[in-house]
Length: 481
Ligand SMILES: Nc1ncnc2c1ncn2[C@@H]1O[C@H](COP(=O)(O)OP(=O)(O)OP(=O)(O)O)[C@@H](O)[C@H]1O
Image 1 (cartoon, rainbow, N blue to C red):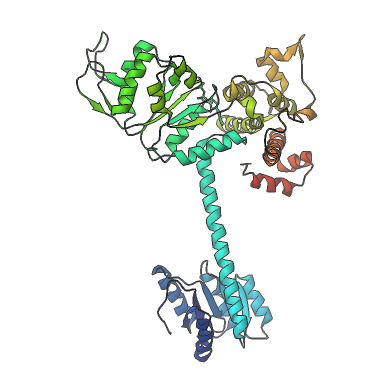
Image 2: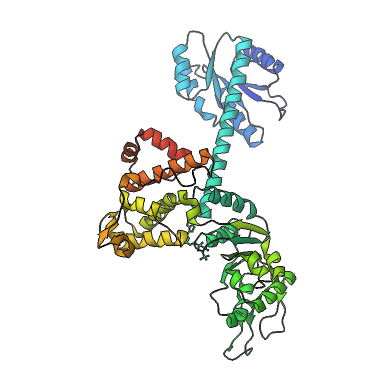
């Protein structure tokens, strides 16, 4: 065994052949071409060397392997070594009339073969091509696993949608979550503000610490202070023991102030002080408490307008504003309706161990209806219809039972199933074509899968494409069917 110093920045070749003169010559050619070469005359020893070098962090990039090696010199025995080099490509050396042996070796996983007597130029070409091919394969693998991790992170987000608005929010959340910047989420009710707040927490470095959500509008003004700051026993009538407030509970974690626009002015002053000083006194206590929280707040109010009208303190607004995330009403991103339906139906089926699908008319109706309560209303309507469904398919009958407005003179008002996609959309030129085409394709796929019980063959037939074509699109859009 001739082991030379290995330079980490050079491509490393392990040449396994028992003919020392041949090894020397090949090694010389390869070294001249800039490779670092180690030779070895025995298959077993080559294996040991391979693992040792790998453990030392200087693994080989390519193996060139003769098949007729000691002790048996039988090429069949040499074949057994081919797939023992893990992800490192193997090029086999064969006799010049051993074509079938070479093919067998390739079948077993060899990357290529070179027939003896070896032509030095061909040797260099094959080595270079094999190494490059393998580097490329590794890059693809790395990218794929990065993509999967990214996808998993997006899934953690739980924010479903194909619209530009949802896509930008997903991107923004992924970027701001690891920072400590305060986040202000503004948008209509039922558009996922709480999901976003949750995602910022889960994807940030406080994920293992508390996430405390305070519905500022739901807590009566006179209770808000004691709820937030906590109190000391005897602080007021009924305070018969010390109580920790929500601020203290959120210590080291995230404090989500939902509906912050509803916070009374007097309370706004107190909150501002806490945010500025990072400390506060529980009601009736003289013990100063220090807290470290990441602040995320949300409102469906136009807060700058509330500031102008003197209903919200400007100093508090600028304190909480940090980075603003804006959610849109469902009306402004109707392309999200079908993906959302599919998501909620899937979740419903998983939770209730059912296999409900939607009739084409139901899908069409959902897609065309107005959703003033946004995603929350869409979700509730779907779940209510699913809950009262007696068969495996939600039909207009169920919808009529929960939505009286669908009945005119006692009859269901439904347009034909074929017209479920509004075309051309009202805002046809408002968004780039590529984005609209993708959103429409996703919608059509989700729709076909929803009415065909997730059966790809039937869905593909209905869409007029091949099953493979459908599968390719499902992969391209990363839909989880
Ligand atoms: N993009 C979305 N993907 C999945 N679920 C969503 C999405 N948007 C909203 N939802 C669902 O809709 C419901 C309402 O969402 P959420 O409570 O986050 O809205 P909100 O904007 O905080 O509403 P409000 O202003 O009334 O507090 C929740 O059940 C939530 O899971």
